[in-house]
Image (cartoon, rainbow over all chains, first blue to last red; front, side, top):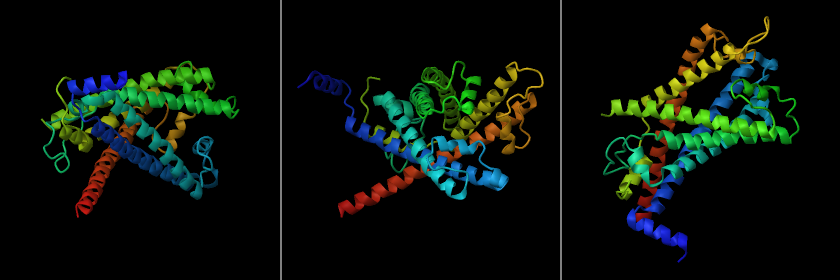
Length: 217
Length: 116
């Protein structure tokens, strides 16, 4: 038996958690969050495209059309709305799913103590309890994915050779000091965005948990 | 945490419901802060006289009537941010809960078929 297996075995004796069930639980919920995020963002892109067409007709797509940089085949047209919905589902679904994977990994075996607002139900399936959020884990997971996302999208603009013309992306420097459309700027921006999203996640979790506490005392 | 985690506790965490009003309000507050700060940060930056402030963010007025990059606009933006965030939070929580019920239904039906 290797060192890692010995450690796992020793840990299991101290804290006998059904790790197989825990991993399956994290996988299941990451799929659920992926579906939730993907579907909702697809709906938003679909309707935003149609709203833009309805309002501006042939002139539509000044800003929304920029999505074509990341959504191949997208345009502010009726058929483009479907393409946009597809890519939004893929990107946001993957990002949401990855975020939950990280969230679950950070929470680990503390999942039950942290996530449940009340005593765990004897019949968790038919009488579910109310979910709580763990701000630090949420911030680490969502912040990491957001930071990585900004770095990758900046890197993509550099790789495709349009960094100099990416004036709209460069406007992010108004909110993220030091950000530029370059590999180094993407790295700086990614790190700063991680911090901003981490703080926002702490706030989100604190407000959500407080309301849950008041409503389910 | 030193106490062991039981299987039904893990299942409770998996099938726990999202609190719909709580997530709506929490995401709403975050949305309000986001749009308020996005506008205020532009206003606090020094720009040459007669130079438009935030011409790109001002384009939001096409979707949000009454919004502008001005101090009054920060409050209008905060209201819109809250509404948009609350709708997003509501939709996410409702979808999450429904998706879990549907998945659960599928699992129960499959397990019943397997038992037969």
